[in-house]
Amino acid sequence: MNFLIGAFKPACNISITFSDGKSRKQVPLKKENGQTVMVPLFQSQENIAGKISIEPFQGKKIEHNGVKVELLGQIEMYFDRGNFYDFTSLVRELDVPGDIYERKTYPFEFSTVEMPYETYNGVNVRLRYVLKVTVSRNYGGSIVEYQDFMVRNYSPAPSINNSIKMEVGIEDCLHIEFEYNKSKYHLKDVIIGKIYFLLVRIKIKNMDLEIRRRESTGSGANTHVETETLAKFELMDGAPVRGESIPIRLFLSPYELTPTHRNINNKFSVKYYLNLVLVDEEDRRYFKQQEITIYRLQDS
Amino acid sequence: MLGKLLIQDSTKASWNYLVGAFKPPCNIFISFADGRSRKQVPLKKENGKTVMVALFQSQENIVGEVVIEPIQGKKVEHNGVKIELLGQIELYFDRGNFYDFTSLVRELDVPGELYERKTYPFEFSTVEMPYESYNGVNVRLRYILKVTISRNYVSNIVEYQDFVVRNYTPPPSINNSIKMEVGIEDCLHIEFEYSKSKYHLKDVIIGKIYFLLVRIKLKNMELEIRRRESTGSGPNTYVETETLAKFELMDGAPVRGESIPIRLFLSPYELTPTYRNINNKFCVKYYLNLVLVDEEDRRYFKQQEITVYRLLET
Image (cartoon, rainbow over all chains, first blue to last red):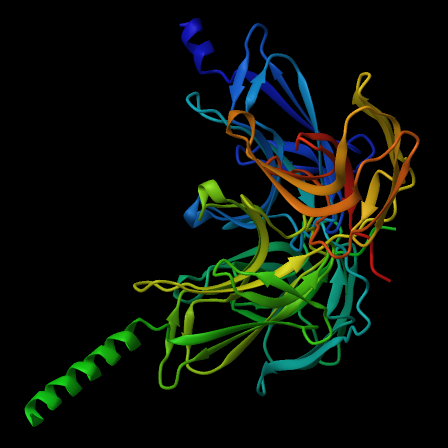
Protein backbone atom coordinates (compact mmCIF):
# COMPACT_ATOMS: atom_id res chain seq x y z
CA MET A 1 0.00 0.00 0.00
CA ASN A 2 2.83 2.38 0.89
CA PHE A 3 4.42 1.59 -2.43
CA LEU A 4 1.19 2.47 -4.23
CA ILE A 5 0.88 5.78 -2.39
CA GLY A 6 4.48 6.57 -3.27
CA ALA A 7 3.81 5.84 -6.93
CA PHE A 8 1.27 8.67 -7.13
CA LYS A 9 3.35 11.22 -5.25
CA PRO A 10 5.04 13.84 -7.47
CA ALA A 11 8.65 13.00 -8.22
CA CYS A 12 9.99 16.27 -6.83
CA ASN A 13 9.45 19.24 -4.56
CA ILE A 14 8.94 22.63 -6.17
CA SER A 15 9.50 25.71 -4.06
CA ILE A 16 8.82 29.25 -5.24
CA THR A 17 10.46 32.15 -3.41
CA PHE A 18 10.43 35.89 -4.04
CA SER A 19 13.77 37.67 -4.16
CA ASP A 20 12.64 40.26 -1.59
CA GLY A 21 10.53 37.74 0.33
CA LYS A 22 12.09 38.46 3.72
CA SER A 23 11.70 42.22 3.56
CA ARG A 24 8.37 42.36 1.72
CA LYS A 25 5.17 42.87 3.71
CA GLN A 26 3.11 39.70 4.24
CA VAL A 27 -0.69 39.76 4.50
CA PRO A 28 -3.24 37.06 5.36
CA LEU A 29 -5.06 35.32 2.51
CA LYS A 30 -7.94 32.93 3.02
CA LYS A 31 -7.56 29.77 0.92
CA GLU A 32 -10.41 27.67 -0.52
CA ASN A 33 -10.01 25.12 2.28
CA GLY A 34 -10.71 27.82 4.86
CA GLN A 35 -7.12 28.06 6.07
CA THR A 36 -5.45 31.46 6.26
CA VAL A 37 -1.89 31.76 4.98
CA MET A 38 0.51 34.69 4.90
CA VAL A 39 1.44 35.75 1.36
CA PRO A 40 3.57 38.62 0.00
CA LEU A 41 1.90 41.88 -0.93
CA PHE A 42 2.52 43.62 -4.26
CA GLN A 43 1.03 46.54 -6.12
CA SER A 44 0.62 47.23 -9.82
CA GLN A 45 3.76 48.12 -11.82
CA GLU A 46 6.08 46.32 -9.39
CA ASN A 47 8.72 43.83 -10.51
CA ILE A 48 7.94 40.29 -9.48
CA ALA A 49 11.20 38.40 -9.26
CA GLY A 50 12.43 35.34 -7.48
CA LYS A 51 13.70 31.80 -7.74
CA ILE A 52 12.18 28.41 -8.37
CA SER A 53 13.88 25.35 -6.91
CA ILE A 54 13.09 21.89 -8.20
CA GLU A 55 14.40 19.10 -6.02
CA PRO A 56 13.90 15.49 -7.11
CA PHE A 57 13.25 13.01 -4.32
CA GLN A 58 16.23 10.93 -3.26
CA GLY A 59 17.26 8.58 -6.06
CA LYS A 60 14.65 9.81 -8.55
CA LYS A 61 15.26 11.61 -11.82
CA ILE A 62 12.69 13.75 -13.58
CA GLU A 63 12.33 13.49 -17.32
CA HIS A 64 10.51 16.57 -18.52
CA ASN A 65 9.40 18.43 -21.62
CA GLY A 66 10.27 21.85 -20.26
CA VAL A 67 9.76 24.01 -17.19
CA LYS A 68 7.82 27.27 -17.26
CA VAL A 69 6.51 29.85 -14.83
CA GLU A 70 3.30 31.78 -15.46
CA LEU A 71 2.02 34.88 -13.73
CA LEU A 72 -1.77 34.67 -13.84
CA GLY A 73 -4.46 37.14 -12.88
CA GLN A 74 -7.70 35.17 -12.61
CA ILE A 75 -11.37 35.74 -11.89
CA GLU A 76 -13.45 32.81 -10.65
CA MET A 77 -17.22 33.01 -10.40
CA TYR A 78 -18.58 30.66 -7.76
CA PHE A 79 -21.59 29.65 -9.88
CA ASP A 80 -18.97 28.50 -12.41
CA ARG A 81 -16.50 27.19 -9.83
CA GLY A 82 -13.20 25.83 -11.08
CA ASN A 83 -13.43 27.77 -14.34
CA PHE A 84 -10.87 30.56 -14.10
CA TYR A 85 -11.01 33.52 -16.44
CA ASP A 86 -7.46 34.80 -17.04
CA PHE A 87 -7.28 38.55 -17.58
CA THR A 88 -3.48 38.60 -17.27
CA SER A 89 -1.17 35.81 -18.37
CA LEU A 90 2.60 36.22 -18.65
CA VAL A 91 4.89 33.28 -19.33
CA ARG A 92 8.61 32.66 -18.90
CA GLU A 93 10.14 29.44 -20.17
CA LEU A 94 12.73 28.33 -17.62
CA ASP A 95 14.19 25.15 -19.08
CA VAL A 96 14.24 23.17 -22.30
CA PRO A 97 13.29 19.46 -22.30
CA GLY A 98 15.76 17.28 -20.40
CA ASP A 99 16.40 15.42 -17.16
CA ILE A 100 16.78 16.74 -13.62
CA TYR A 101 18.91 14.59 -11.31
CA GLU A 102 19.52 17.00 -8.46
CA ARG A 103 18.24 20.25 -7.00
CA LYS A 104 18.09 22.92 -9.71
CA THR A 105 17.34 26.62 -9.26
CA TYR A 106 15.86 28.90 -11.90
CA PRO A 107 15.68 32.68 -11.49
CA PHE A 108 12.63 34.46 -12.95
CA GLU A 109 11.53 38.05 -13.37
CA PHE A 110 8.37 39.77 -14.57
CA SER A 111 9.07 43.50 -14.91
CA THR A 112 6.66 46.31 -13.99
CA VAL A 113 3.66 44.01 -14.16
CA GLU A 114 0.35 45.72 -14.75
CA MET A 115 -2.03 44.32 -12.15
CA PRO A 116 -4.96 46.69 -12.59
CA TYR A 117 -7.36 44.98 -10.19
CA GLU A 118 -6.96 44.19 -6.50
CA THR A 119 -7.09 40.72 -5.02
CA TYR A 120 -10.66 40.12 -3.85
CA ASN A 121 -12.42 37.28 -2.03
CA GLY A 122 -16.16 37.76 -2.15
CA VAL A 123 -19.36 35.80 -1.69
CA ASN A 124 -19.82 34.87 -5.36
CA VAL A 125 -16.53 35.84 -6.93
CA ARG A 126 -12.82 35.68 -6.33
CA LEU A 127 -10.01 37.58 -8.01
CA ARG A 128 -6.56 36.15 -7.41
CA TYR A 129 -2.99 36.40 -8.63
CA VAL A 130 -0.78 33.31 -8.73
CA LEU A 131 2.59 32.17 -9.91
CA LYS A 132 2.17 28.77 -11.53
CA VAL A 133 5.19 26.56 -12.18
CA THR A 134 4.68 23.67 -14.59
CA VAL A 135 7.11 20.83 -15.14
CA SER A 136 5.68 19.34 -18.35
CA ARG A 137 5.89 15.57 -18.69
CA ASN A 138 4.79 13.13 -21.34
CA TYR A 139 3.32 10.24 -19.44
CA GLY A 140 3.37 10.96 -15.73
CA GLY A 141 1.15 14.04 -15.91
CA SER A 142 2.62 17.50 -15.50
CA ILE A 143 3.81 18.59 -12.06
CA VAL A 144 2.27 21.93 -11.09
CA GLU A 145 2.97 24.19 -8.13
CA TYR A 146 1.12 27.40 -7.25
CA GLN A 147 2.22 30.39 -5.20
CA ASP A 148 -0.47 32.92 -4.35
CA PHE A 149 0.36 36.55 -3.80
CA MET A 150 -1.78 39.53 -2.97
CA VAL A 151 -2.21 42.76 -4.92
CA ARG A 152 -3.40 46.04 -3.42
CA ASN A 153 -3.48 49.30 -5.33
CA TYR A 154 -3.41 52.70 -3.71
CA SER A 155 -5.18 55.91 -4.69
CA PRO A 156 -4.35 59.48 -3.79
CA ALA A 157 -6.91 61.40 -1.75
CA PRO A 158 -9.56 62.69 -4.18
CA SER A 159 -9.30 66.37 -5.09
CA ILE A 160 -13.10 66.75 -5.03
CA ASN A 161 -14.92 65.12 -2.14
CA ASN A 162 -18.36 66.64 -1.69
CA SER A 163 -20.44 66.05 1.39
CA ILE A 164 -23.72 64.12 1.13
CA LYS A 165 -26.72 66.16 2.26
CA MET A 166 -30.32 65.13 1.79
CA GLU A 167 -33.81 65.76 3.12
CA VAL A 168 -36.05 62.69 3.18
CA GLY A 169 -39.19 61.50 4.90
CA ILE A 170 -42.88 60.76 4.70
CA GLU A 171 -45.08 63.75 3.99
CA ASP A 172 -46.68 65.26 7.13
CA CYS A 173 -45.32 62.37 9.14
CA LEU A 174 -41.52 62.35 9.34
CA HIS A 175 -38.99 64.74 7.83
CA ILE A 176 -35.29 64.32 8.47
CA GLU A 177 -32.20 65.90 7.03
CA PHE A 178 -29.00 63.88 7.09
CA GLU A 179 -25.50 64.95 6.25
CA TYR A 180 -22.28 62.94 5.88
CA ASN A 181 -19.10 65.00 5.71
CA LYS A 182 -17.73 63.20 2.62
CA SER A 183 -18.85 60.94 -0.20
CA LYS A 184 -15.46 59.20 -0.54
CA TYR A 185 -13.75 57.53 2.39
CA HIS A 186 -10.48 55.66 2.74
CA LEU A 187 -10.37 52.33 4.56
CA LYS A 188 -9.17 53.85 7.84
CA ASP A 189 -11.38 56.92 7.65
CA VAL A 190 -14.10 58.23 9.99
CA ILE A 191 -17.64 58.97 8.85
CA ILE A 192 -18.68 62.20 10.52
CA GLY A 193 -22.17 63.58 10.10
CA LYS A 194 -25.46 64.46 11.69
CA ILE A 195 -29.16 63.64 11.49
CA TYR A 196 -31.53 66.57 11.98
CA PHE A 197 -35.21 65.92 12.74
CA LEU A 198 -37.36 68.54 10.99
CA LEU A 199 -40.73 66.90 11.70
CA VAL A 200 -41.57 63.94 13.96
CA ARG A 201 -45.16 62.71 14.04
CA ILE A 202 -44.49 58.99 14.49
CA LYS A 203 -43.13 57.22 17.53
CA ILE A 204 -39.56 56.26 16.71
CA LYS A 205 -37.80 54.00 19.17
CA ASN A 206 -34.30 53.77 17.70
CA MET A 207 -32.05 54.61 14.78
CA ASP A 208 -29.10 52.66 13.28
CA LEU A 209 -26.47 53.34 10.67
CA GLU A 210 -25.42 50.28 8.65
CA ILE A 211 -22.53 49.77 6.26
CA ARG A 212 -23.58 47.48 3.45
CA ARG A 213 -21.53 45.80 0.75
CA ARG A 214 -23.29 45.00 -2.52
CA GLU A 215 -21.46 42.50 -4.71
CA SER A 216 -22.83 42.16 -8.20
CA THR A 217 -21.57 39.39 -10.52
CA GLY A 218 -22.41 38.44 -14.09
CA SER A 219 -24.41 40.64 -16.43
CA GLY A 220 -27.85 41.05 -17.95
CA ALA A 221 -30.27 38.29 -16.99
CA ASN A 222 -27.46 36.37 -15.27
CA THR A 223 -26.69 39.06 -12.70
CA HIS A 224 -26.29 37.78 -9.14
CA VAL A 225 -26.44 40.41 -6.40
CA GLU A 226 -25.34 39.63 -2.87
CA THR A 227 -25.74 42.19 -0.08
CA GLU A 228 -23.95 41.88 3.26
CA THR A 229 -24.37 44.09 6.30
CA LEU A 230 -20.84 44.64 7.56
CA ALA A 231 -21.57 47.03 10.42
CA LYS A 232 -24.55 48.05 12.55
CA PHE A 233 -24.01 51.19 14.57
CA GLU A 234 -26.69 52.47 16.95
CA LEU A 235 -27.08 56.23 16.61
CA MET A 236 -30.07 56.79 18.88
CA ASP A 237 -32.14 54.91 21.43
CA GLY A 238 -35.45 56.50 22.34
CA ALA A 239 -37.84 58.93 20.69
CA PRO A 240 -36.46 62.07 19.05
CA VAL A 241 -38.22 65.43 19.06
CA ARG A 242 -38.52 68.02 16.36
CA GLY A 243 -35.37 70.13 16.03
CA GLU A 244 -33.14 67.47 17.58
CA SER A 245 -29.73 66.84 15.97
CA ILE A 246 -28.02 63.45 16.36
CA PRO A 247 -24.27 63.36 15.70
CA ILE A 248 -22.56 60.56 13.74
CA ARG A 249 -18.97 59.45 14.26
CA LEU A 250 -18.29 56.02 12.79
CA PHE A 251 -14.72 54.68 12.49
CA LEU A 252 -14.21 52.39 9.48
CA SER A 253 -10.96 50.71 10.57
CA PRO A 254 -12.58 47.92 12.68
CA TYR A 255 -14.48 46.57 9.66
CA GLU A 256 -13.08 44.36 6.90
CA LEU A 257 -13.78 46.65 3.99
CA THR A 258 -12.28 46.64 0.51
CA PRO A 259 -12.12 49.54 -1.92
CA THR A 260 -15.12 50.10 -4.19
CA HIS A 261 -14.61 48.00 -7.33
CA ARG A 262 -16.55 49.28 -10.32
CA ASN A 263 -17.01 46.93 -13.25
CA ILE A 264 -13.94 44.74 -12.84
CA ASN A 265 -13.28 43.50 -16.38
CA ASN A 266 -17.06 43.44 -16.97
CA LYS A 267 -17.28 40.51 -14.56
CA PHE A 268 -18.22 41.98 -11.19
CA SER A 269 -18.50 45.10 -9.09
CA VAL A 270 -18.42 45.83 -5.35
CA LYS A 271 -20.17 48.89 -3.99
CA TYR A 272 -20.67 50.24 -0.48
CA TYR A 273 -23.73 51.94 0.98
CA LEU A 274 -24.55 53.78 4.17
CA ASN A 275 -28.01 52.69 5.23
CA LEU A 276 -29.81 54.89 7.74
CA VAL A 277 -32.56 52.87 9.47
CA LEU A 278 -35.27 54.28 11.73
CA VAL A 279 -37.50 51.82 13.64
CA ASP A 280 -40.88 52.84 15.06
CA GLU A 281 -42.66 51.32 18.04
CA GLU A 282 -44.53 48.91 15.78
CA ASP A 283 -41.17 47.69 14.42
CA ARG A 284 -41.72 49.22 11.02
CA ARG A 285 -38.38 50.10 9.42
CA TYR A 286 -37.84 53.33 7.49
CA PHE A 287 -34.54 53.48 5.66
CA LYS A 288 -32.51 55.55 3.24
CA GLN A 289 -29.55 54.01 1.45
CA GLN A 290 -26.74 56.20 0.12
CA GLU A 291 -23.78 55.00 -1.94
CA ILE A 292 -20.29 55.96 -0.79
CA THR A 293 -16.95 55.35 -2.47
CA ILE A 294 -14.19 53.61 -0.57
CA TYR A 295 -10.56 53.84 -1.66
CA ARG A 296 -7.25 52.56 -0.37
CA LEU A 297 -4.93 55.32 0.78
CA GLN A 298 -1.21 54.56 0.92
CA ASP A 299 -0.28 53.86 4.56
CA SER A 300 2.19 56.52 5.61
CA MET B 1 -33.51 33.83 -74.96
CA LEU B 2 -35.30 36.09 -72.50
CA GLY B 3 -36.12 33.10 -70.29
CA LYS B 4 -32.47 32.12 -70.25
CA LEU B 5 -31.47 35.64 -69.24
CA LEU B 6 -34.02 35.66 -66.44
CA ILE B 7 -32.67 32.39 -65.07
CA GLN B 8 -29.12 33.73 -65.16
CA ASP B 9 -30.18 36.88 -63.35
CA SER B 10 -31.94 35.07 -60.52
CA THR B 11 -28.95 32.75 -60.07
CA LYS B 12 -26.68 35.76 -59.78
CA ALA B 13 -29.00 37.38 -57.24
CA SER B 14 -29.13 34.27 -55.04
CA TRP B 15 -25.34 33.96 -55.25
CA ASN B 16 -24.96 37.58 -54.10
CA TYR B 17 -27.33 36.83 -51.25
CA LEU B 18 -25.23 33.83 -50.22
CA VAL B 19 -22.02 35.86 -50.29
CA GLY B 20 -23.72 38.52 -48.16
CA ALA B 21 -24.87 35.91 -45.66
CA PHE B 22 -21.28 34.99 -44.82
CA LYS B 23 -20.03 38.54 -44.54
CA PRO B 24 -19.66 39.74 -40.93
CA PRO B 25 -22.57 41.99 -39.93
CA CYS B 26 -20.25 44.78 -38.77
CA ASN B 27 -16.95 46.52 -39.35
CA ILE B 28 -14.39 46.71 -36.55
CA PHE B 29 -11.74 49.44 -36.50
CA ILE B 30 -8.88 49.52 -34.00
CA SER B 31 -6.97 52.77 -33.63
CA PHE B 32 -4.25 53.97 -31.27
CA ALA B 33 -4.75 57.17 -29.30
CA ASP B 34 -1.45 58.62 -30.54
CA GLY B 35 -1.70 56.94 -33.94
CA ARG B 36 -1.00 60.08 -35.95
CA SER B 37 2.07 61.16 -34.03
CA ARG B 38 3.51 57.70 -33.35
CA LYS B 39 6.24 56.38 -35.63
CA GLN B 40 5.08 53.83 -38.21
CA VAL B 41 7.34 51.03 -39.47
CA PRO B 42 6.91 48.47 -42.26
CA LEU B 43 5.76 44.97 -41.31
CA LYS B 44 5.69 42.06 -43.73
CA LYS B 45 2.42 40.10 -43.48
CA GLU B 46 1.96 36.37 -44.15
CA ASN B 47 0.55 37.12 -47.61
CA GLY B 48 3.81 38.85 -48.56
CA LYS B 49 2.34 42.35 -48.46
CA THR B 50 4.06 45.04 -46.43
CA VAL B 51 1.94 47.32 -44.25
CA MET B 52 2.85 50.26 -42.04
CA VAL B 53 2.11 49.64 -38.36
CA ALA B 54 2.64 51.53 -35.10
CA LEU B 55 5.94 51.14 -33.27
CA PHE B 56 6.08 50.65 -29.49
CA GLN B 57 8.68 49.70 -26.93
CA SER B 58 8.43 47.80 -23.66
CA GLN B 59 6.79 49.58 -20.70
CA GLU B 60 4.78 51.91 -22.93
CA ASN B 61 1.05 52.45 -22.50
CA ILE B 62 -1.00 51.01 -25.33
CA VAL B 63 -4.13 53.10 -25.53
CA GLY B 64 -6.77 53.57 -28.17
CA GLU B 65 -10.31 53.00 -29.33
CA VAL B 66 -12.25 50.16 -30.84
CA VAL B 67 -15.10 51.20 -33.12
CA ILE B 68 -17.78 48.67 -34.04
CA GLU B 69 -20.07 49.72 -36.84
CA PRO B 70 -22.95 47.42 -37.82
CA ILE B 71 -23.55 47.25 -41.56
CA GLN B 72 -26.56 49.30 -42.68
CA GLY B 73 -29.81 47.84 -41.39
CA LYS B 74 -28.21 45.01 -39.43
CA LYS B 75 -28.09 44.53 -35.69
CA VAL B 76 -25.37 42.55 -33.95
CA GLU B 77 -26.45 40.30 -31.08
CA HIS B 78 -23.43 39.41 -28.99
CA ASN B 79 -22.26 37.73 -25.80
CA GLY B 80 -19.70 40.37 -24.98
CA VAL B 81 -16.87 42.31 -26.58
CA LYS B 82 -13.27 41.97 -25.44
CA ILE B 83 -9.85 43.14 -26.51
CA GLU B 84 -6.69 41.12 -25.95
CA LEU B 85 -3.08 42.20 -26.19
CA LEU B 86 -1.13 39.12 -27.26
CA GLY B 87 2.59 38.47 -27.59
CA GLN B 88 2.96 35.32 -29.69
CA ILE B 89 5.68 33.05 -31.02
CA GLU B 90 4.93 30.92 -34.07
CA LEU B 91 7.37 28.22 -35.16
CA TYR B 92 6.97 27.49 -38.86
CA PHE B 93 7.30 23.72 -38.46
CA ASP B 94 4.22 24.07 -36.23
CA ARG B 95 2.54 26.74 -38.36
CA GLY B 96 -0.75 28.15 -37.10
CA ASN B 97 -0.03 27.12 -33.52
CA PHE B 98 0.75 30.32 -31.63
CA TYR B 99 2.49 30.21 -28.28
CA ASP B 100 1.29 33.15 -26.16
CA PHE B 101 3.96 34.48 -23.81
CA THR B 102 1.94 37.60 -22.98
CA SER B 103 -1.83 37.77 -22.81
CA LEU B 104 -3.72 40.72 -21.33
CA VAL B 105 -7.50 41.03 -21.59
CA ARG B 106 -9.94 43.89 -21.19
CA GLU B 107 -13.67 43.24 -21.35
CA LEU B 108 -15.24 46.10 -23.29
CA ASP B 109 -18.96 45.30 -23.24
CA VAL B 110 -21.44 42.99 -21.55
CA PRO B 111 -23.80 40.82 -23.65
CA GLY B 112 -26.32 42.85 -25.61
CA GLU B 113 -27.16 44.20 -29.04
CA LEU B 114 -25.49 46.78 -31.26
CA TYR B 115 -27.70 48.82 -33.56
CA GLU B 116 -25.36 51.64 -34.44
CA ARG B 117 -21.72 52.65 -34.37
CA LYS B 118 -20.26 52.23 -30.87
CA THR B 119 -16.83 53.29 -29.60
CA TYR B 120 -14.97 51.59 -26.77
CA PRO B 121 -11.81 53.10 -25.29
CA PHE B 122 -9.12 50.69 -24.08
CA GLU B 123 -5.85 50.99 -22.18
CA PHE B 124 -3.05 48.60 -21.29
CA SER B 125 -0.64 50.40 -18.95
CA THR B 126 3.16 50.05 -18.99
CA VAL B 127 3.00 46.76 -20.83
CA GLU B 128 6.03 44.54 -20.43
CA MET B 129 7.01 43.47 -23.94
CA PRO B 130 10.38 41.89 -23.23
CA TYR B 131 11.06 40.57 -26.72
CA GLU B 132 11.21 42.41 -30.03
CA SER B 133 8.98 41.68 -33.01
CA TYR B 134 10.85 39.30 -35.32
CA ASN B 135 10.15 37.73 -38.71
CA GLY B 136 12.62 34.97 -39.39
CA VAL B 137 13.06 31.95 -41.63
CA ASN B 138 11.60 29.41 -39.20
CA VAL B 139 10.05 31.56 -36.50
CA ARG B 140 7.97 34.67 -36.04
CA LEU B 141 7.40 36.75 -32.92
CA ARG B 142 4.52 39.17 -33.16
CA TYR B 143 2.39 41.45 -31.02
CA ILE B 144 -1.27 41.99 -31.83
CA LEU B 145 -4.43 43.53 -30.51
CA LYS B 146 -7.30 41.10 -31.00
CA VAL B 147 -10.92 42.26 -30.71
CA THR B 148 -13.51 39.51 -30.32
CA ILE B 149 -17.27 39.92 -30.54
CA SER B 150 -18.57 36.68 -29.01
CA ARG B 151 -21.74 35.26 -30.53
CA ASN B 152 -23.89 32.26 -29.64
CA TYR B 153 -24.95 30.42 -32.75
CA VAL B 154 -22.77 31.91 -35.42
CA SER B 155 -19.02 32.25 -35.34
CA ASN B 156 -17.33 35.02 -33.36
CA ILE B 157 -16.30 38.17 -35.18
CA VAL B 158 -12.58 38.77 -34.75
CA GLU B 159 -10.38 41.66 -35.85
CA TYR B 160 -6.60 41.88 -35.49
CA GLN B 161 -4.29 44.89 -35.36
CA ASP B 162 -0.57 44.19 -35.57
CA PHE B 163 2.00 46.47 -34.03
CA VAL B 164 5.78 46.29 -33.82
CA VAL B 165 7.91 46.31 -30.69
CA ARG B 166 11.53 47.42 -30.62
CA ASN B 167 13.59 47.67 -27.46
CA TYR B 168 16.63 49.86 -27.07
CA THR B 169 19.88 49.23 -25.25
CA PRO B 170 22.43 51.74 -23.97
CA PRO B 171 25.97 51.36 -25.37
CA PRO B 172 27.75 48.59 -23.46
CA SER B 173 30.17 49.74 -20.77
CA ILE B 174 32.67 47.03 -21.77
CA ASN B 175 33.22 46.49 -25.48
CA ASN B 176 36.48 44.66 -26.08
CA SER B 177 38.05 44.39 -29.49
CA ILE B 178 38.34 40.99 -31.18
CA LYS B 179 41.93 40.04 -31.95
CA MET B 180 43.05 36.62 -33.10
CA GLU B 181 45.90 34.84 -34.87
CA VAL B 182 44.80 31.95 -37.09
CA GLY B 183 46.11 29.93 -39.98
CA ILE B 184 47.60 26.69 -41.23
CA GLU B 185 50.99 25.81 -39.78
CA ASP B 186 53.91 26.74 -42.07
CA CYS B 187 51.43 27.67 -44.77
CA LEU B 188 49.31 30.69 -43.87
CA HIS B 189 49.32 32.81 -40.72
CA ILE B 190 47.08 35.82 -40.40
CA GLU B 191 46.15 38.10 -37.56
CA PHE B 192 42.77 39.82 -37.69
CA GLU B 193 41.39 42.52 -35.48
CA TYR B 194 37.90 44.03 -35.25
CA SER B 195 37.59 47.26 -33.23
CA LYS B 196 34.63 46.01 -31.16
CA SER B 197 32.75 42.85 -30.28
CA LYS B 198 29.38 44.62 -29.89
CA TYR B 199 27.90 46.77 -32.64
CA HIS B 200 24.68 48.74 -32.92
CA LEU B 201 22.52 48.44 -36.02
CA LYS B 202 23.91 51.60 -37.64
CA ASP B 203 27.50 50.99 -36.58
CA VAL B 204 30.69 50.56 -38.63
CA ILE B 205 32.96 47.53 -38.36
CA ILE B 206 36.52 48.83 -38.39
CA GLY B 207 39.47 46.48 -38.35
CA LYS B 208 42.46 45.08 -40.18
CA ILE B 209 43.88 41.81 -41.48
CA TYR B 210 47.63 41.38 -41.11
CA PHE B 211 49.43 38.67 -43.10
CA LEU B 212 52.21 37.15 -40.98
CA LEU B 213 53.04 34.28 -43.34
CA VAL B 214 51.82 33.61 -46.89
CA ARG B 215 52.92 30.38 -48.58
CA ILE B 216 49.79 29.68 -50.59
CA LYS B 217 48.51 31.55 -53.62
CA LEU B 218 45.48 33.53 -52.47
CA LYS B 219 43.34 35.21 -55.08
CA ASN B 220 40.82 37.11 -52.95
CA MET B 221 39.43 37.71 -49.47
CA GLU B 222 35.96 38.72 -48.32
CA LEU B 223 34.09 39.45 -45.12
CA GLU B 224 30.57 38.05 -44.69
CA ILE B 225 27.88 38.90 -42.16
CA ARG B 226 25.93 35.79 -41.27
CA ARG B 227 22.73 35.37 -39.31
CA ARG B 228 22.20 32.07 -37.51
CA GLU B 229 18.63 31.42 -36.42
CA SER B 230 18.17 28.47 -34.12
CA THR B 231 14.66 27.21 -33.22
CA GLY B 232 13.43 24.40 -31.01
CA SER B 233 15.61 22.53 -28.54
CA GLY B 234 17.47 19.26 -28.09
CA PRO B 235 17.10 16.86 -31.01
CA ASN B 236 14.37 19.10 -32.48
CA THR B 237 16.72 22.04 -33.04
CA TYR B 238 16.52 23.63 -36.49
CA VAL B 239 19.39 25.92 -37.48
CA GLU B 240 19.09 28.23 -40.46
CA THR B 241 22.08 30.30 -41.60
CA GLU B 242 21.73 33.24 -43.99
CA THR B 243 24.51 35.30 -45.51
CA LEU B 244 23.28 38.87 -45.26
CA ALA B 245 26.33 40.67 -46.63
CA LYS B 246 29.39 39.82 -48.74
CA PHE B 247 32.07 42.48 -48.69
CA GLU B 248 35.25 42.09 -50.76
CA LEU B 249 38.31 43.10 -48.76
CA MET B 250 41.07 42.14 -51.20
CA ASP B 251 41.47 41.10 -54.82
CA GLY B 252 44.83 39.61 -55.74
CA ALA B 253 47.62 37.89 -53.85
CA PRO B 254 48.84 39.39 -50.56
CA VAL B 255 52.46 39.34 -49.42
CA ARG B 256 53.90 38.76 -45.99
CA GLY B 257 53.67 41.85 -43.78
CA GLU B 258 50.75 43.31 -45.72
CA SER B 259 47.89 44.88 -43.74
CA ILE B 260 44.38 45.06 -45.24
CA PRO B 261 41.99 47.60 -43.67
CA ILE B 262 38.33 46.83 -42.96
CA ARG B 263 35.56 49.43 -42.92
CA LEU B 264 32.11 47.89 -43.21
CA PHE B 265 28.96 49.97 -42.61
CA LEU B 266 26.07 47.96 -41.13
CA SER B 267 23.23 50.37 -41.94
CA PRO B 268 22.55 49.08 -45.50
CA TYR B 269 21.77 45.59 -44.23
CA GLU B 270 18.51 44.43 -42.65
CA LEU B 271 19.89 43.32 -39.32
CA THR B 272 18.08 42.73 -36.05
CA PRO B 273 19.61 42.75 -32.58
CA THR B 274 21.14 39.53 -31.28
CA TYR B 275 18.44 37.50 -29.50
CA ARG B 276 19.69 34.99 -26.96
CA ASN B 277 17.20 32.34 -25.89
CA ILE B 278 13.88 34.05 -26.50
CA ASN B 279 11.55 32.31 -24.04
CA ASN B 280 13.44 29.03 -24.66
CA LYS B 281 11.98 28.96 -28.16
CA PHE B 282 14.60 30.47 -30.45
CA CYS B 283 17.77 32.53 -30.71
CA VAL B 284 19.34 34.72 -33.39
CA LYS B 285 23.09 35.25 -33.50
CA TYR B 286 25.37 37.15 -35.85
CA TYR B 287 28.82 36.17 -37.08
CA LEU B 288 31.58 37.85 -39.03
CA ASN B 289 32.99 35.28 -41.43
CA LEU B 290 36.41 36.01 -42.91
CA VAL B 291 36.88 33.98 -46.11
CA LEU B 292 40.14 33.57 -48.04
CA VAL B 293 40.02 31.86 -51.45
CA ASP B 294 43.13 30.35 -53.10
CA GLU B 295 43.74 29.87 -56.81
CA GLU B 296 42.32 26.35 -56.68
CA ASP B 297 39.10 27.79 -55.21
CA ARG B 298 39.67 26.26 -51.80
CA ARG B 299 38.03 28.38 -49.12
CA TYR B 300 39.69 29.09 -45.77
CA PHE B 301 37.43 30.78 -43.25
CA LYS B 302 37.23 31.92 -39.67
CA GLN B 303 33.87 32.71 -38.11
CA GLN B 304 33.62 35.07 -35.15
CA GLU B 305 30.45 35.86 -33.19
CA ILE B 306 29.53 39.50 -32.68
CA THR B 307 26.71 41.02 -30.66
CA VAL B 308 24.31 43.38 -32.40
CA TYR B 309 22.14 45.73 -30.33
CA ARG B 310 19.61 48.47 -31.01
CA LEU B 311 20.73 51.92 -29.92
CA LEU B 312 18.08 54.57 -29.31
CA GLU B 313 18.10 56.90 -32.32
CA THR B 314 18.62 60.49 -31.23
